Length: 191
Image (cartoon, rainbow, N blue to C red; front, side):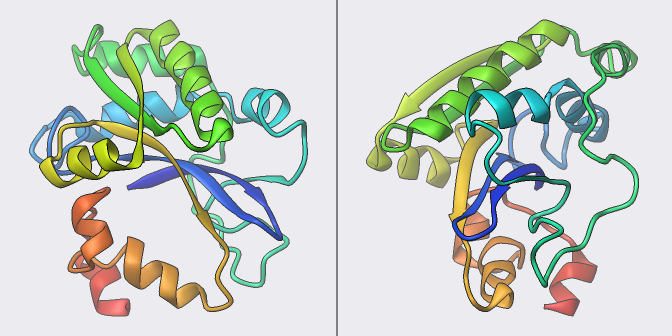
C-alpha cells in the first residue's frame, strides 16, 4: 500500500498510502498498478525533502532508510520522479482526469504540506486531485468507510519493526483494515 517515504532516522517516516479496497488504486481496478505507478513517478521526493523537511533526514525508497538496521530497498522504482513516464502510464490506462481524493491530518503541518505538494504534482501529470485536510475524527470515519483514495501519513519509529509490519502490512490487522486495506498472501505468511 505504501510506495514512497521520507524519513528522519530518530523520529519516524512520512509517506503516502493508497486505499487498496475502493477507488482507482483498488485491487478491483484492472489498471490499479498503472495508476499507482503513475502517482509514484509523478511524485518528486527531492522537492518534498527540500520544501517540507528542509533536507533533514533521508529520502527512503522503502519504509526504513539506509541508516536503519531494518533497511531494505525494493527493486524497480527507486524514488526518482519522471513526469513524462507518469503521463504515459495514465494515458496507457486511459485514466487521464481520474478523480483522486487525497487527505491529510489537520494536526501535523508536514503531512498537510506534503499533501499540498503531492496534489500539485499529481494534478500536473493528469490526475484530478481533490485534497482535504481533516481532523482526526473525520479521518477515522473516512478510513472506516473507505471514502478516500490516498492519504498523507506518518509513523514513528518503534524499537521493534515487526510491530509496525504487524499493524500496517498484515491484512488481518485492524490498522491495515481501516487504512490501506493492503493484502498480500506472502506478506501475511511471513508475518
